[in-house]
Amino acid sequence: MKTNPIFHTARRTTMYHLAALLVFFLVLGPARESVASILAYEGFNYLPNTPLATMAGGTGWAPGPWTQLSGGMVDQPPSLTYPTALPSTGDALLTQVGGGASRNFAAPLSNSGSDLWISFLEQNSVGAVPGAQVDIQQPTAVLPDIEVDKATGNAVTLNGLPAGSVTGVGADLFILQLVQWSGGGTLVNLYLDPGLILGPPNASVLLSGPAFQAQDFYFQSNAGQELDEIRVGTTLSDVAAVAVPEPATVTLLACALLLPFAVKTRRWLRQHRVA
Figure (cartoon, rainbow, N blue to C red):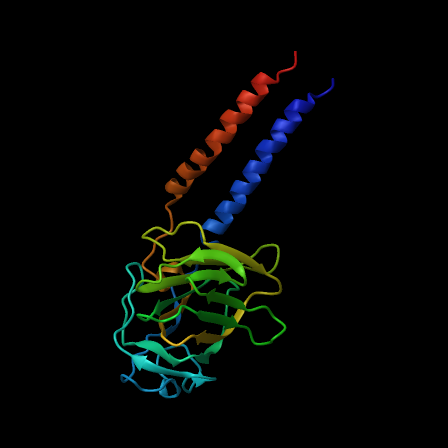
């Protein structure tokens, strides 16, 4: 008995939709979370107007202060805030003269065994030209890093991939999720200014190699840019006051997305039925 090729075509179309939906949900939510654990925090709790090279506080960092590689950055009150960020402490870091700075974590932070979450707040001072970069670097230069750029017009990219834009008014919350991909490498999701419930990422990139090893936090910006509230943890709740969708919500969303495909496929089969 010969199988109807029209049925095969419709079935393949439905399978493509299901595959795309599966990828969407893999990217949407956290893949693996362990018990909440804050691994590093920097709230820039220093004396106002002190230079970056004297800043050696926070938790989870290597002994010693930040390294000012170029330009000039100082402690500047007040602390930056965002509605779904965790409570802020201390002040913020202000770039007075465009340049770059970096600081090593106490030990490389890996997403092996659980997801790794990183968040920070970034803001344009009044009248400043937007332009900043955060680079999470690994121990060796041959391994890929994670680069979040904010360009003129407040357009944001993740490793060169467009991620939309931030408002540029007040502080913006950036959240990175590092997932060890089952097929090898690390899936990086970037969320910009999320609401109370975490939605789909603004951009995603798959990095090759073994589990990511975050060794160094690098910040570079134009004059007038501010940085604050750097957090690294193993769960979303470690780095932001944002919740992931409940399983029931995800199920309803899946049904809502699949229903049009199912109706369309059934209608297409009925119209092209072969006697």
